[in-house]
Image (cartoon, rainbow, N blue to C red; front, top):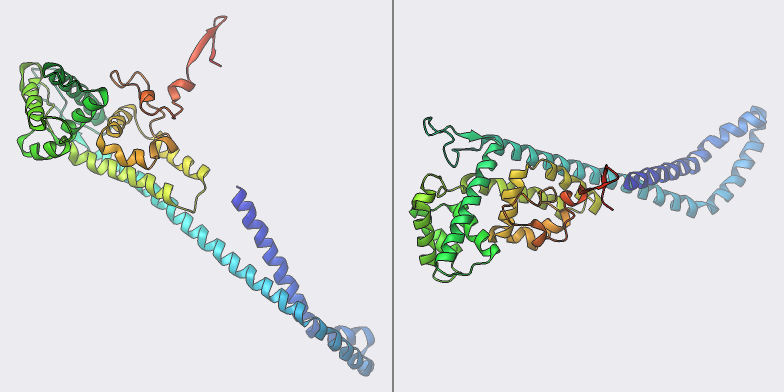
Length: 330
């Protein structure tokens, strides 16, 4: 709103300057007719004398005419600049909404089979749209349990972030032999990497997890999904056409479209090495991307332990009982 007021102010300044210039330039042209009207046609000599005197005075105002002309030119240039900036801003906003539309299109096109059969007597039916992320959540949950078992059996002493990082790598690349080289490269910082990968595959193939489709790859959809989301945030964050308040408002629009299951997958993406750029560029803290993620939703992981600068919605909505009336906690 402040920018708009400034633009209106400068528009009026440019208009006043232009009017002043037109007055100083046009007045000498109109003055003879005005004097003839005042003195009459028979007083032409008087008019000529007056015009000569005016000419002498007018010459002394030449520098002012030049100055007002410069102001008028500045006003025109400034108006053109403002219009150009407005056009750029409109183009940026249109691009932002197109990327949001593309994100929705991606989600609608997502299709996966459930992690396990709800009814053994019926064939598996694929799920699509945002329900896919519910299946992703279930798959990640079981993968983290599997990695924890591997850690305990082999005394690896993996931390919670380590477990999340390894499980997310399996979730993203899959456990199929064709992706083993990618897994080995990704997990090379962990001791005995190849043994770790083999142990995970052994556990997933065991009786406990065999009935779940935990080893499938999910990168085909997720690579495009997260890349588009990242670039949507990037074009808003990097522009100079928006102030900080406006940037946060646009990212809030993006954030409002994410379901809880999407936020769950995003959270573990951020905990893994896949989310390094997000964290380094401060997209998580600056725009509070996972603000709406419920604290008890992440299977034992508390988002506040990893991103403590965010004001989570679950904290804002915490209620306390006072005299039988529910009210926000102070």
